[in-house]
Length: 389
Image (cartoon, rainbow, N blue to C red):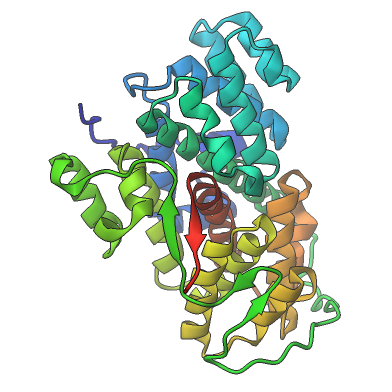
């Protein structure tokens, strides 16, 4: 049965509530300049925690959310999901397992498998390989429920980074004595030299065109529901021939919200240049070990910027990549929000403003980095890249 259409109500926006964003604040104003992203973020939350969603119980989904929020960590989100579990009447022993960080202590082997899979994707997403994924069907988790779980963990990875980044933006905005500052001292820049069109291969990463193959069954278009077909057509021009989209459309409303968020983040006009959004996405993908995402977004950077020198540097060492102080700062922030979102603070945002990013550009970078915490985990845990022959 199709889920009911989700209607956005800004007054009930969870992220605004958790960060404490008020309508008269500069951070609120910046965030709601990208209202499509805010609406799709809330829509994703609503779809993933819809009590009527089959496959995983609401309690199982909330236990995953609590566990993931504790691991990252994100105290505000952990408190939110713990309270939701209490309100839902969840088993106290299961809540204790999610809070303790010991999935093996779960009395239910299915819950233990779900939480162990969650741990891998949160802590080191590259470990979410085929063997890890197939522990779920073995524990009695159906393919549509695997899609729900994977989307949920990936969404939580996005959500905690969005909350951390917005909280840091708000913190800086509340320090009126902070000056614009002087350009930050650049990192020692890598000297890799390449020309547009050159094939780059380094540390297992490449800018070549790759394919991607799912490890579990994708939707047969001849058997797809009208809603599934509609969501595929909304999501991407090539979605109907993509294993990625045809796998995710097992849960069409979750995919609809996710695709809306992705497209609004990466393609909206104005703000941070699209090339710089692609640079942030490539850095995050390199750090997370997502070869497929890194290849796609390296190509898009080159198409937009007409150069690939910084891509060669990212593949070599993202910590020193950048041809300008601005690129270096973008890379540094992208690494920090990926590896240590809880450490992102007002100084992290100030460093971006010191090299010329506006409030709106900072938000666009935060969005592009956070959405690739989501995208990388899906690509890494649901299938594998296929290299040219």
